[in-house]
Amino acid sequence: MNAEPTPSAFSDDDLRRRRAAARRLGWLLAAFVLGLYLIGLLIKR
Amino acid sequence: MSIATTHPGGHAAEPYQGGLRRWLTTTNHKDIGTMYMMFSLIMFFVGGLMILAVRAELFQPGLQLMKPEFFNQLIGIHALVMIFAALMPAATGFANWMIPLMIGAPDMALPRLNNWGFWLLPPAAILLTLPFTLALFGIGDGALATGWTFYAPLSVQGGMGVDFAILAVHILGISSIMGSINIIVTIFNMRAPGMTMMKLPLFAWGWLITAFLLIATLPVLAGAVTMLLTDRHFGTHFFDAAGGGDPILFQHLFWFFGHPEVYILLLPVWGLMPHVLATFSRKPTYGYKAQVYSFIAIGLLSVVVWAHHFFTAGMPVPALIYFMFSTMAISLPLAVLFFCWIATMWKGAMSFETPMLFAIGFIVLFGIAGLTGLILADVAADAQYHHSYFVVAHFHYALFAGGIMGVMTGVYYWLPKWTGHMYCEKLGKLHFWLTVFSFNLTFIPQFFLGLAGMPRRIPDYALQFAEFNAISTVGAFILGLSQLIFAWNIWITVRGGKKAEGRVWESAEGLEWELSSPPPHHSWETQPVIK
Image 1 (cartoon, rainbow over the protein chains, first blue to last red):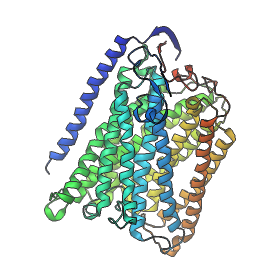
Image 2: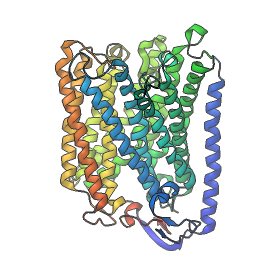
Image 3: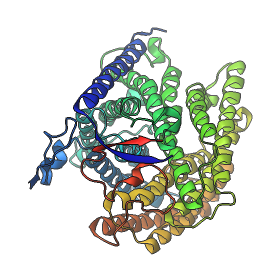
């Protein structure tokens, strides 16, 4: 794998877009975790 | 001290703070990685001191130094500290430091969550260990004395140390889930252009699987200990047979988390190994795709094998057979990893710097963990070895030789990158040889003790076990003292030493080596492009 730094910096827009996507996925994963926890608590044998 | 820095792309507002405020409020992945590593090292010694006290008690038969209740507390808290406060934070420290550098990201995707995730750890560690201190002042009856597994009904009846540990495990779990979410979204969203998933460094792949395992299993542990809390204080009977509950249910819930936890501790190290082996063999990694698919296979299999931890509790024969064979099936992708590691070294121009020594030591000793694990996976054999010292020896080959020696491999490999200084090679090699010698001196006798029938978690034992216990204790003290060399080597490397170049190791491959050592406070201000 070769890496070649280019003169172009991370743009504000690019980083903002990536972080927004990361936040959305983060909330989705957090909801999954909370759901798993609550389902576990509510299961009755 | 405050040095203003500019950083394109939204980081410009964060000044480079000096002093305590920097460490309290930092959102920089390298600072947070450093804090994780420091915390891990401190807790490694705390957990180590606990078990040295245990080994001192076991040096001779009879009770010499402590009451059985205190012995039980030390064993349980040693395990919780080593797993949750030493090994897991060390792996998270690696991830924080290295994943953004490796994938060409300027930072983790969610930096404030990152800070929060770390600062949850110290209060949790205090909660775990505080009952010891409180007991000295006559408050309560000490720490958790159930072993790290919290098995009901003992944990339902235990003292307030159980409550402290339940709260601590909740907090540690929340911290780990935050870290995992951050790592997943960072890998998915922050990779440099051109870095496809099949170009992702294997260390990042190992951590990605780890993070998914954490978010899939930690809520189950949290649920189980919450149910335990309600059994203890709010009149429920989840695990109380007298009230219609089932103590074995707790074992199922606990080990649904507990077995994947083994792979959670090991996958980051398995991801690291190919980097180290390729660098010091001066060859490309052998079988990149095979290793990625093995990580995924092990991750999937790890969540369907949990009941092999309690074969002896009783379950239907078809269940026994299923859990036996599914457990043994894990050895297939694991064997693929071993073959790939060995093939990476095969006919390479190998050199034996400290990280390479630890990597080879890891392969040999972790191999023993794998082979003894196969014995324990066998239902018939497990009936004899369950709850014996054979199990203790087996999982220390997995978690010390596999986990902690893997972490030491990573520390020696990346310390020059982190600090900008080369560590002392002589001290590193001395540390390695003393660790390998004393580790085997400690744990080989424990295999024989287990085979001879010595049960684990007892402060006193029959005279027939005396010699092997004495040898094991001597080994444990040498092992403990050897780790002071490790700490000293880190200290002198942080303070100074020969300057390290950006590409610390001549044949190291990957984006992280394109940056200076240490990397600038804000790395990858210019976007790397992967060809």
